[in-house]
Image (cartoon, rainbow, N blue to C red):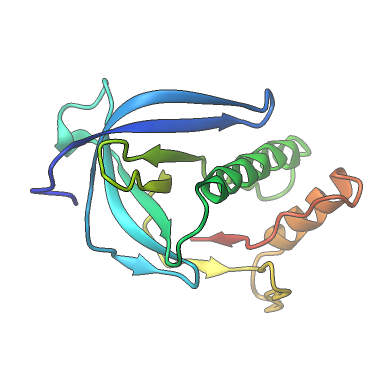
Length: 175
């Protein structure tokens, strides 16, 4: 992935849901210009991030950078990462209860292309290969196939109860 793609300097943004603070860092990335997948709301682009422990671009991990299909305010990207990182915190609390199957919410962060004219922003997470399965959605869908795992529904219910009925994590997917 990203072979022949020029490297770009970007500003990275990570959110810590415990301290509720953003950390800013300079990064070097390569991102494909052509999307490799598309959901109902966002396009997905292959990305690599050159970190100090990588041994060149070939050793860099694969990421997926997501951008809204329709233009949205920049703040929406920050809100999305906040939500995902809060869901990750709920995942840690759920796993601390020692359920039969643990959950892992993928860490998300932002990259801002400060050297591009439009200053594009993307939500980024590690690329996980495999066939994705949706277990529930924010529009009310719940996978009720009894042969499927019950962990995703239990996790959503856990977040609702733990938040004293103020929040619920949905749109649970996995490979």
